[in-house]
Structure formats: structure tokens, C-alpha cells
Length: 336
Image (tube, rainbow, N blue to C red; front, side, top):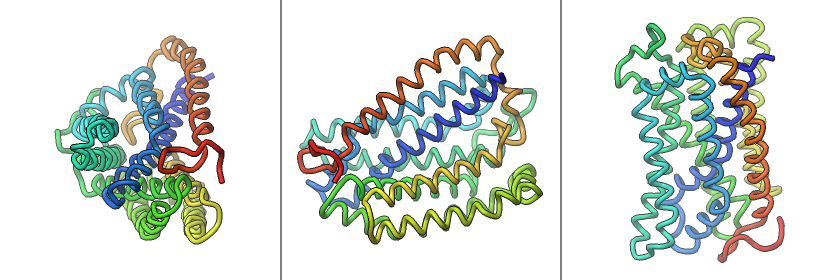
């Protein structure tokens, strides 16, 4: 049993769960200035109020797991990406404070609404920049970061940052289409229509630029047997996008959100194919960065207990608040 592979899978799942779950509530924050002051903004907040805090559990698990299971990677990545990571964490804190204070300090609600938007936007952009900086390569010498303070900043990292902002905004619109009704739902559909082609353009730009960043990316996608994945992947993304577009026109309210999640899942699969088995692409493999076997086993015992608990209360929260959002919060009955 290779514990290193198991821990790589646990961290990958935690990061993917964070992106898929926290992405839509960050997306609602990004769209927030577009909503009408009053009932629309209150309903948008209520749509994520029961779940947004729990969604961030996966970020803690991913970061903590990286430190515990792959300490070398943590020691290299953190100094390389201090600026975007600190920006992300501060923005998430600012956003969380704004979420609570906009209800408790109505005299300054306009400020807290802006803080909620700004925190969501900065956190999302910083996450995208972090991904781009990791993909473009981190300078490593003698098992330590050897680059400069600004190496993370590049045209590619800015592109990935902007792409994630678009993607999260589309996820947020999809969640509101599913969970709200009336004018807010109509606005969410209107916002989603231009966001979908924008996301496809952004994904195409990132996908075309990525193979030229690192030799292994080109090998993975354009040399046999990588072509078996490279050829169908764009078709799968376009198929999912078609289903999003179809869901925006007609059909069950959950369809745009679900198919947008599938676009994200396909993108995450493509990312995994590009970098596996490295934790720092082209520099450090998961086995080189791994903690001792005894440490991994000790932590795995805790993970076996903790992960089902997290999954259980997350599923319960989503089940309890499975209906539509009205003026006073979620309806007492189920989906309709």
C-alpha cells in the first residue's frame, strides 16, 4: 500500500471539493454588485448562508494535509507564493467578516456589501494566480525555493486568475438559478449567458498556453498515449457547455449548475494529467516531498475518522437546506 499515493489523492480530492463547493459562493460574491440593493442581495446571501462556512473546511484540509503529508512541497511552495496566498487568506477573512456584519450593522451595509464583493474577487483571483504560478514552474535548488519575490507574477498567472473569476461567477449564477426564484433567478440567468462563452474562451487560452510552459505538459498531451485524452477532452468540455446553455434556456433549474460543475471537474482532471506524479511540476515528485511512512500512517488514521464526519455534516447541511430561498430564507419544504 503506497501511502504517498493515498495522501496525494486525499489532498487532490480536498482541493477539488473546495473549488467545487466554495467556488459558487465566491462567485455569488463576485456578482454581488449586479444584484439590486434590498431583497435581491438578501436572497443571494441567504442562498449560501447555511453552507458557505462549511465549504471552506476543505481548504483547511488541503493546506493542512500538504503540510503534514508533503512537508518539502509545503516548504518550497509557501515562500514562492507568499503574496497570492496571503492575499487570498486576508480576503477570505475580510469576506467572512463582511458576511456577518452586513446583517448586524445595517447603517453601513453598503460598505459591507462592497467588502463582501472585494473579498470574494481578491480571494478568487489570488487562487487562480496561485495555480498559474505553480503550473508555470517554481525554481528549486537544494530542496529549497531559489526564485525571487515576484516570480509568481506573469501573464500566464494573471490569465489563470481572470479565468477562475469567470468560472466562479458562472458557478455562482448557476447556484442562484437553482436555489432562487423570481427576479433574482431571472438576473442570474441573464448574467450566466455571457459568462459561459467567456469561460470557454478563457479555458481555451489557458489550455493552449500550458503545454509550452513545461516539457512534461507537451509530452502528456501531444505524444502517444496522451493523445487519447487530448482529443476527446475539448469535445467533452464543449458538450458540457452545450448542456449549460440548454439548461439556461429550459429544463430543471439545477441543470446549469450541475453541468458547470462538470466543466470544472474536466478541467481538474486535465490539470491532474498534466502534473502527475509531481507535486511541484517538473521539480519535485510526490515521493520526493513525502513525509516518513510512520507519519503518513499516523495521519491516515485521523483522516479515516475525520473525512466521513466532514462528508456527513456537509451532506446533512445540503439536504436540510435543499429547497428554494424566499424572502425569509429557505422554504420549509423540499425542492420544487
